[in-house]
Amino acid sequence: MAPAKEKDSGMVIMPREEFEGLLNCAAERGAERVLAHLGLENGHAARDIRELRDLLEAWRDARRTAWQTIVKVATTGILASLLLGAAIKLKLFGGQ
Image: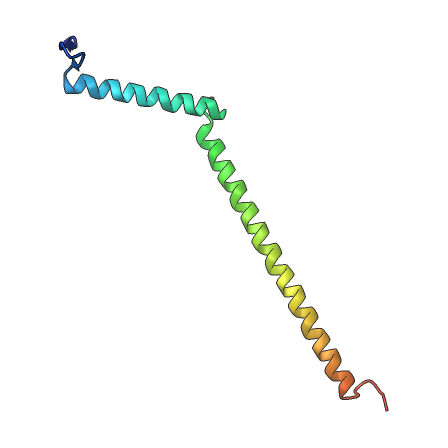
């Protein structure tokens, strides 16, 4: 690797491969710092994130199922009330 040269304007000139290696190193360090900041630095980050996604999906499924159950119960209650009202109106319960 050739050493980087500095011009009078303060710019540094270096070979493309060396520059790309420097960028890759900086990106890896940045990613490691972000993972450490999030508490995912111990090598289990991928598994932890998958588990969090699974947990979030399970929460969404449970919420969706709860709403569906509420709608079914309400619909059943309304239909039962309508049937009971019709039966009373038609005097099907031994009324006069």
